[in-house]
Length: 390
Image 1 (tube, helix red, strand yellow):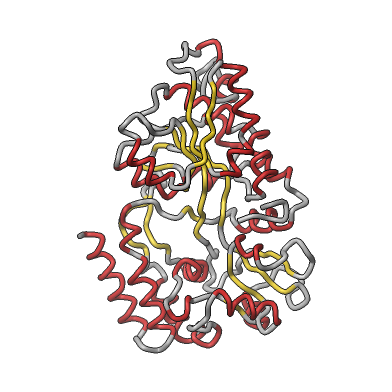
Image 2 (image 1 turned 180 degrees about the horizontal axis):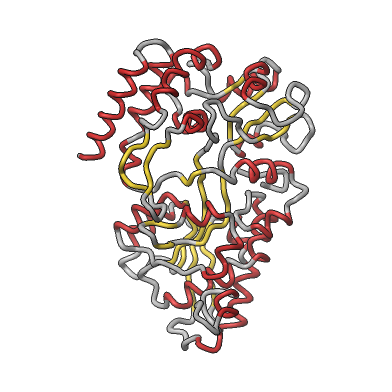
């Protein structure tokens, strides 16, 4: 997605902890003369300054390499000595990468408070942090500014008309999650440390949501809707609002006053929570110098100046608070950033793969009147639990 800009710490040592992972006086002699960092094309351009600064400070060259399949190539090459020291990627790779023992936990130290809380949380797995966030994506409510000039409540959204792509009848639990959670039904429960557990939370208000789908949702939502039909509905004015993500700026000019970006209002009385996707940087467990790989990530990639440059080059929504402030004149960034503040990181646990198919199919059966809400929702939970167990 692109916007209009193209698109240690111990007592007595608090200061050192605040400026990053390590204190320079304690830095060991480097084991390598270069680090390899896998990134995409925009990140490669944006990180040139950080790489040059790191070279000046440490004598270590940072090779920024554009890799078209970083996840697959990282897994296949990490044990051969040919893989990168650092790789940029999505937070929901964590479960797979941890299971394959190819990434190192990192300590963000004082850096953590410089980023959006839920973006930091996204890179936590089994109570350890495995990445530094850089950009975020979540859903918001895009509305025709003439039809909906201010932040609406749900009744106002209904009156204006709501577009939401349901993939021509295939369903879309990702987008419907924002409505479902407002009834209290989240996909998984969490432990006391905030880690997702493979225990479903879909019965916590889920039946209320299922009933809403059958009664109100069936009147408001078009079961046969697609991306294209949603675009046309908003452009023609037949629908006043659309639940979608920042990628929509590729087809709608959201930096004009024709459209406004709002938080998604509650339908069921609780907060409407969408899924949060976060991109960031991982450190390879097979790096020949994990100390300096971590140092580059936390102390150089994590600094506000680097994060701001990432925005300036890519136009992507920053996870870093200072970078977001630097983008204060960008309506797309500010609108979606505001809407993402209470978003929930897309669960990266293996059990998530067992959820989507039954979840989406059941929602559509209820919405189209092909299944009775309580029976269908109860069976869906049982089927997903069985799939997770297997």
